[in-house]
Image (cartoon, rainbow, N blue to C red; front, top):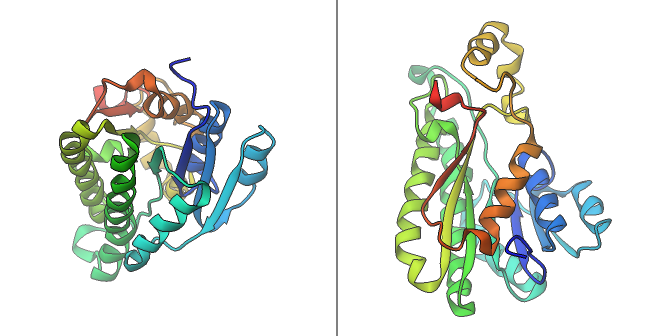
Length: 249
């Protein structure tokens, strides 16, 4: 029962595909109703969740415009009257050599990956404080722990999200809010589609993954349920790495 989310409401951003879709379905399987936020809405994720007998609320939103993040938080709360779990999954990446990285690309990455996340979390956390607690899960990256290469803005944003995770965990623990992060390794998602066309790069990455494969979105299902449930009540400010052993090499 420690892993049950029955009676809980979870907000998941970037819900229509990839990691967000998998985590939203996992939370629904554990009993949560889902508020799905995505640039194109929930897509097929909505029907998959409702087939499990869970309720959904679909919010189509562009997280590239953080000025409206306060309104988004209000809509998320209004959907079912409360938010118990927030999964900040939405993120973008712009690949280029550091010396060629434009401010347009840098700002676009920061707007989605950091600024919108900060504002949405801040406003939903206020409601969690009033409710007496909640769970916040930020999707970081193994690049939160490394320097990367060819993705400077993305690396900077994910380092910052890890910093926010730890700062919020310290500040909000007294309100019974757990703030943790998941760091996926190299995953088969749209964000890595371009990278996966580069055979030499893929071969070099493969050689550093002890598990012998890239991760699938479904590999985040268990970790998401754990961090969203009462099973993790004494886990706070933690980075849960899901990378097949990549960072150990």
